[in-house]
Image (cartoon, rainbow, N blue to C red; front, top):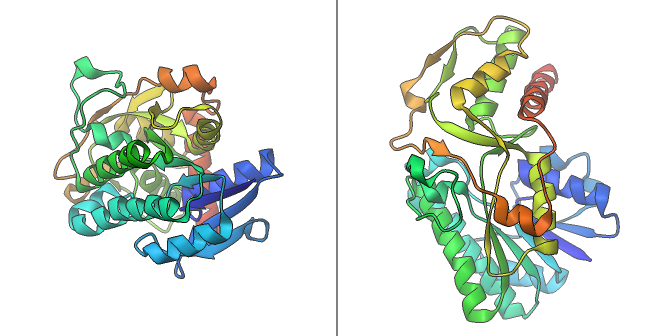
Length: 322
């Protein structure tokens, strides 16, 4: 079986490739990369996977790639995924996430291949919900509160439309907060872990910088998330959408406290106004029963372990001069 992963060089894509290599050795893994894609996250498995240069914004390159690979499964993880960046570059975010996804699905249509396709939407599409909406179900109204969230609504709906119009077997996920080693340091928990590691190493001084600590999030480990994604294409129904997320809910401040418990020195913090979003989503707690009922999946890695592993990842990078 041939599997294509877009975004294979990112946190989730690299962990998904590892999961497949460890658990499904008969699967051939293909990854979509751009000529300038950093390969740090996959350097240890690069000789076990097949990398192909293509660009989501270039339909022809995707047609050539799909004609060559003819994957049975596609995990579409590539995206402009930074919420704060989307406020600075909204059109670029929409172009990458909406038009890029449209190009990928159109390439599937044009080539006539028939893969099952995971389209990675986001819990951000729900926007700011009321307490009455919690835990959030898939039928909750979409109220995007950032250009990134708008782009993920577009990606989500394009995937649904291609299923309805052309019978292309898309399955959408709205994944809630997930993190772990290799998480980009523009995200709160990874930014916190990096700063703590730098303070421990003496390359940064207290206090560390934080944004809004009152937002509520449900955390999952990326390694549990990629197991869920594999089960999605094995057991779930094309045309449907599924919430996926962890079971441990806390405020961002409580998450910071949990990270601080692993620190080897005293850590102080102060709010940096530049880290506050123009509009924020402060309550994200998922109902994942639809996905669990169809797959039997459950998260196995505790948030405490996830945060320790994330902090150790940054400690190791600093040690190696990264």
